[in-house]
Image (cartoon, rainbow, N blue to C red; front, side):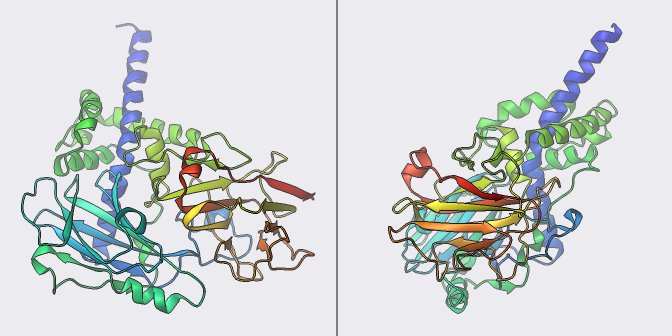
Length: 451
């Protein structure tokens, strides 16, 4: 074999290993989150919910290396989670009447696909009981309990509960307390309420794979054996068998593959970095990147990995659309030394059946983008449809002032900016079909002062 053909073979094999890394990242992340939760005593088949919002700001103008390592805390919802093991029997979730309050349980399988919801949009506003059943379960459920068939025997239920206003915490906590969960054998009287914790989401940190070696693929192979993949993934995964990746093996111990796999991880990480944030790889409209094709099973492994590496909870388009803006109309990165305006004409607010809000985040060049809220003089990190005291124009329009210092118009519509670069994330929950299909677009930012 010539030196040239050998080089070509090595590149091709490393490229395949890079593809395998990108494909495997989402399930390995889920596996590690699960292990972290279990290591700190998080129970199975029971909810853990946040006692406070995840919007705690860091100091003004933080060092990028000190930015919080989670994707975008907000001032809208209390979060919660439950790791659910369905090997023994189904697990039942009971939810109360919503009475207009937005809530959702986003259901992830062991590959971090969103396969379903229990939510106001998906299952309705009335009190209900839902049984999560494993892929091999066959049985009969009690009257009034609706089945949600799960593709893997381990699932993650990721919960959100809306805070209507600063005075709504007590009511929201009481609402959360009516989420009940437990094994089917304990239904109905033995279901238990959530555990309430400060910083409950610490079990979903930003995970660093910069030092990952070939044992990463041992984890992946363990997942493939424990939680068989969906039939539509089987053929694609079969391609990786030529580099030692198949269910239940430890390819890192095979001298034929360990170096190739380690090189593939390095190449895969580089490809992901070059690809960037999935939300920002779609063309911007009016300066906003809005990805409208986040679906139950994202077919492109690169898009899937790019989203999931920032953390769990990337909602599918029917439940929420996120718009992200990090550059202004001048083409430069948004920066607190400049002054911006965002105007919603009357009748053209983000079309949301749930709620909408726009949150300010410090921007950085760190790998996870630094989605971090930063302290400001009026303790406001977000503006939305529930913000108290907004001033509307005589024609019903709303203009939001985005700048570092107090606007001359006053602070009513002010979203304070940090000194350095920042990005805006506009969340629209239960978006209208017009937004989903692209018939509605967010309005552009305007640059008032370019300092």
